[in-house]
Length: 248
Image 1 (tube, rainbow, N blue to C red):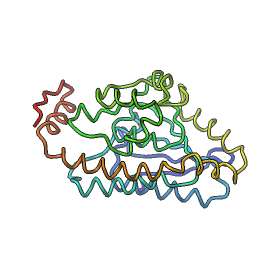
Image 2: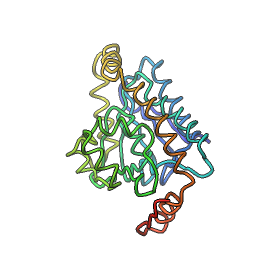
Image 3: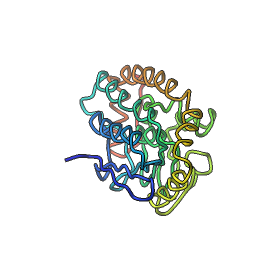
């Protein structure tokens, strides 16, 4: 059974839904399905905007790293890069958590609509890990370099309300999916040849910057996978306690 569903929900607007509730952890298989579906929209003349959303409590709680290793991380990021490479605008509807790589997935979209109580978190430093999914590029683009440093160094959570205030999301709504469909509808009402062309110009450097960042991020993550601090960070997260890092 597929972990991704596609549905037309409005005039020229399609829904691309992850179906791994409640947390929607991603791996290579899920990102491959998402990328295949998203790139297929580029060939659909009757789809001008896409809403990226998820079943369950959380938009995406990050990557499933079990048994992944350095080679697995690189395979995952090859699929992540494909999500940046299409021509069709994407609006992400974020409920619950967009955590770690899940935040990276949300930031691959053009726009984000979040629930007021959503939790957007680049929590890598609290896990003894390095950021990934192109966040080295996309997070500073969204919130500025100084704020991005603060969020990455501290790993603190940002509510939907704060995310809107700092530029991490574009709007807040009690029903982010409904609001994202409405937002996407406004995009889809524009000329269907103009919007992809405008998008390609505005994002002309993004794919190359993200591609380079993903290589660096994969190297940094692979170097930290076997450290005691990463093991402690994961254990502390599971136990819901403060981590005790030793720098080893």
